Figure (cartoon, one colour):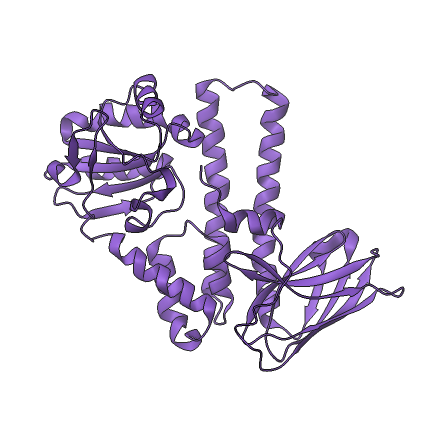
Length: 371
C-alpha cells in the first residue's frame, strides 16, 4: 500500500524541517507561552506543510516549567508543538498570543487559551486518539490469540470487519465535529486527517468556507483537490482507460459499456489488495452472469509478478496495466493515492461510487442487482 504521508505525519510525527519559508514574508509575530509540568529540556514549534515540517522557533523549558515560543507567519498556520514526551497540534496566526497549560505525564489533557481554532483541533485529535486506542486493543486482542500466525480466512474476515467498523466510526465522528466548525480548522481535517474522504463531504467544506478563506494555502489545497475530484464524482462519465492486457493487447474500458463495471486498482505487492481478492472473486462469481464485469488495473512494474498474482488469486476478469506503478497518470486522472481503490460504473459508463470496499461494496451491489 502506498505510504500515506498525512496519516503518518499525524500519528508519529517523524518528519522534520529546519528552515522557515522565506518566500512568504510575515506581517507580524506570534507568541505561544505556558507552563509544562513533569518535563525538562527543550520545546519547539514547527509548521505543518504538505511535504514535511518547518521549524519556526525553539525554547528551553525553565526550572519553573515556563516556556515561550515566538516567530512570524503570514497567515493562519497549523503547527506542531513538540515536547519531550509528546506533541500538541495548534493553529497560530500573525497576532496569536496563545497560552498552554500542560502536564507532560498526561499530555492529552492540556488546556489552551486565546485560540478557538486550537481547541477545535484538540477535539479532532481526541477523536483520533480514541480510535487509535480501539485499534490497539483490537491488535492486542487478536495478537494474544494468534501471535505471529496468520488467522484462518473466516477469522480474517471478522477482524477486517471490526477494523473497518472502528475506522468508519472515527470518520463519522470527525465529519460530525468538523461540520459544526465555521473557522479554518475543517481544512486541517480535510487536508491532513482524512485523505480518503469522499467528494460530497470535501465539496461541502469547500463551498461553505472557501470564499472566506480563499487566501489560505490550506483552503487552496482543498479547493484544487475538490476540483480534481469532480472529474470522478458520482454521475460523471468515467475517464477512458486504454492499456495493454497481460498479453500486450490493448483493452479499453469503454468496450464494457452496457455492463455494470468495477474498476479495481490493485497490485501484486499490495497486501490489503491480495487479502481482499477472495471476497472480490466471490462477488464476481455471484453477479457476473447478471451483467457485472471487473477491470483490474494493476500498479505493478513487473509483468511476471503481476501475471503470477492474477493466476494465484484466480482473478478471471479483464486485466490491464501500464506497469508504471505509482508513476501511472491514472492516479491523477482517477484522483486516488492508495490501493486498493475501486470505481463502480453504470451501464452508460457513469460513475456510481468510488472507494467502496467490504460491507459498503456488498450493500451497493445488492442495491444494484436486487439480491
